[in-house]
Length: 80
Image 1 (tube, rainbow, N blue to C red):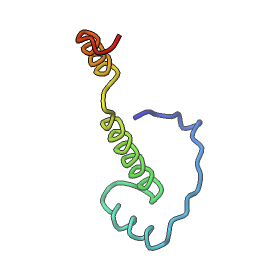
Image 2 (image 1 turned 30 degrees about the vertical axis):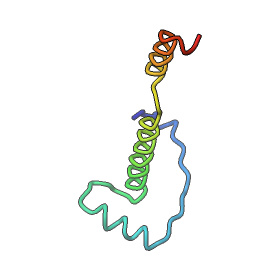
Image 3 (image 1 turned 60 degrees about the vertical axis):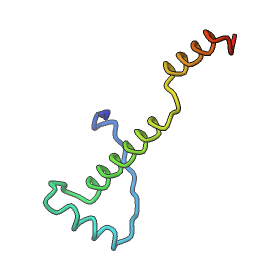
């Protein structure tokens, strides 16, 4: 994960339903998080990181693998 200097961070406000905020407060007890905002930021970063990782894994071939397949097809005479 990357780090942004504190002076460059800009924040926005996101509204969530009160019952959800209450559930988050309960969930974060004993975690060391000092605010709902910091906990939600952490969770969202984890979720986005997981999604990005899944997207990378879904690629059929890496560029290197693709080149190997193309070279093999050339060697077999299927492509020029």
